Image 1 (cartoon, rainbow over the protein chains, first blue to last red):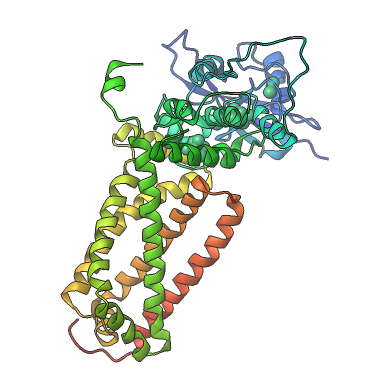
Image 2 (cartoon, each protein chain N blue to C red; image 1 turned 90 degrees about the vertical axis):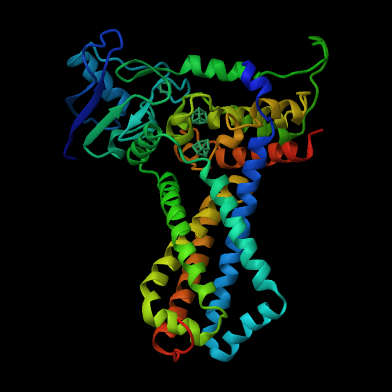
Length: 244
Length: 215
Ligand code: SF4
Ligand code: SF4
Ligand code: FES
């Protein structure tokens, strides 16, 4: 196999030194078998430029911190094999989130706000009895919840979303997916009316224009089209006929 | 919660608007597809073609119908157009975003805006042409197509069917249960068939039917 030389163009900007305007810096790296973008970036940082900023923790597509725009599309650097890309690669940080520097963005604050706003926990009036046997849930419901819970909060769906790019209050597919998860959970006692108050506007589900960039770019391949449509139908019914 | 949002707005408005967009869109696609099927009856000859407007006239459907369609088009323009960013900066962001992402569905939405605006202009011309040449029959239509309107109708047909095809796809994706790859395939087939029917009708009007009556 002939090894390719990768030309990697990286967005450089440090908000700490705003006088230096954003620019693109080009690095070249020799491709090795099974190289991921994460490996390529580390090679650059170790051998060429220690000042390069980017995030990673798990390098196994679990923590969601290494998301960036790879040739324009939101991808996890640790999950993207360089062999799936052309030899010229352009990297930008995710839009929508606050820029920390170069490829590093702060998704944490955004998702924390989301979790607070959607009150992403089970609302119940039961007191927890640690000695009691766990209540049963039917398998189908459990699987639905599990499917939605696979979200790693990487922000790819938000960055790819046209609505989120122009409305900073939009909850995005990750947020609506989260609501869908609590809607199907029988332990959560919130009514549809309660949910409607949080997501029944253009900040929530009706802001979504159905462009499906979220669905196309979710690295966990969550069924976001189905989740969004489910929430939309429920919330439209609630908005028009009033909820239970 | 901010005061202006707490007291100044209708919590349910966004839901109503989204449903209105859905219903008006559905109605217009239904109308457009039936309309094209009616026009395509010319394939079976002028007699059959002329029967359609006669029946619609006799039952007053044309009079109520045309009026209703105009109203729904205007309504649809308002509710679907509400998602077009009003300021230039946001439009630029969307434009750059679409180019960077180069994702099909985002691009089709941009085209949807462009075709939507074109349809407003084209449809006004079309309605004006029809009403000023009332009634509808094969001879008058042929006259129209042969004299000035051939290329106009070619363009109008493609733009409308594209907008309707993508629009109904978007409705299905936003509200439906079926995976969008499947929906997309089915709708491509339907849209292509209707465009072909429309083209056939246009060519027949252009080259086969004898023109007569007012243009
Ligand atoms: S489908 Fe909705 S949430 Fe997903 S990218 Fe499009 S507008 Fe955003
Ligand atoms: S839904 Fe998918 S793309 Fe969005 S944050 Fe979760 S894992 Fe990432
Ligand atoms: S490093 Fe954790 S998802 Fe990529």
